[in-house]
Image (cartoon, rainbow, N blue to C red):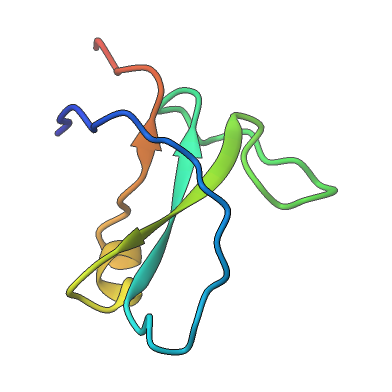
Length: 75
């Protein structure tokens, strides 16, 4: 399942304790997550993380494996 995500403009900010529900969403180049780098433990196509405000705890999004992809899986 996929849907378009709006453009992201990165703006560095300091985080505060009041931001209780922020999901650190991984961004991948492709949907493929099989090759892992031994040095970092991250998939080879991992680009960055984007911090998204959410009404649900981050564990909810981790459990259902939410991620942002730069390329759709056309299979």
